[in-house]
Image (cartoon, rainbow, N blue to C red; front, side, top):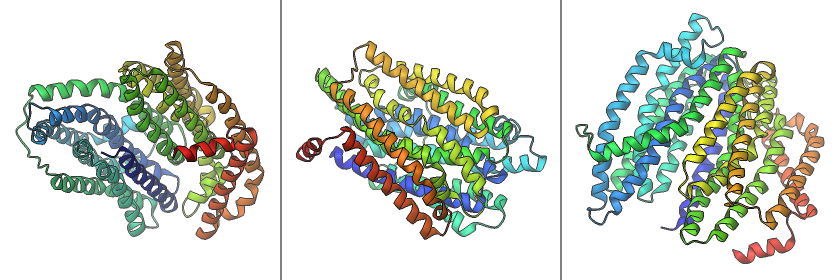
Length: 520
């Protein structure tokens, strides 16, 4: 397998999905705005998303994929057919559980929605019934996306990474089409159509991966459920992984519930939109670094080359800071024009854009730490230490919860994002200090020299952009051509200023560029 090609295709599809996600959010802001209807839809989408991240794409994938690969690679077995039989056994147990859970949630949608929102800020009975209706419309997505995860795990094991990576694009395309074709002047009706589109996208993703599996020679049959030794081992592996991921997901639900119950209508939307923008550099930089660093460091440690592993992690941290520090400063300083250009039109008012920019600034304080977690955790996983990162993540989630309760009333919609940023910084500090104490990570001379210079360069860029912000204000809320032109000039100017500042501070030298070209 050509690893570079595989990573390139996955990265390109991830970028496409993120861009389409921004288009989807911009249209959602235009047609639904920031108010009761948008909050109701985002709450309804939170529950299936929580279980998807917790079980389908998190714990289940982490347990299933290694076992499937071992079945296929076992010299005493018959290769792929052995893996397919294991997948059928897993499916036969997973499917009844998912169906039962879906039916149970559909029946108990009202109390589940109340627990998820803590009453949704004293909503009227009609408003609460509307939220319950949207939850019932979105929850079948859990069943469908869990099956997508199983099929995607099989295809990834067969090195067909791009097929599963393309599946989220179908979610975004479905929601975009629903917004363009079925939007109305009534935000409540448009939000209901979005809830229906979520489940429709699950059907499309399942069909996409089913066809891809058939083309790969994988034909899964539904069998009578049997708890054979392999399935028991799979379930035994799922629960610890779910416990680790559960801290994050439960905290997200608590944050949503606090915002829904204590803040004014629209606050959930402000926080959601800000998080979507904050997730863009995290998805493109953090996930890519984590994907590349873990196998590289594992291979180097497997050869006993601790020095090479240390160098790899130093360069990973350097690259993370090089890309993340300017993004952090830009999202804090230029949050208002960025949010206005993307979201401020139609139902999404200037006041909503300003509130979203405030939430974005609070989230962005923690952007370096969100990405450095992806750089530091491979240092543990490559040494077969999976317990320490989970323990520190749990501590971080406890800090997040406590700070949510402290900050949400005085800071309103800025409270939960700031709590998340501080908690993530605590997580990075714990991970970093433990690696230092174990002598498994020591900043080398190059990182020590460049890191403060990169920070200075980012701050210089931020100072320049702060004084240029007012120049973009008349354009970012104008016509589509004006706002996208203003965004292009804004990003281009910031990039140019940062590049000049990097060379002016000595963070990078001409010799470094020549060396990079020679290496390539």
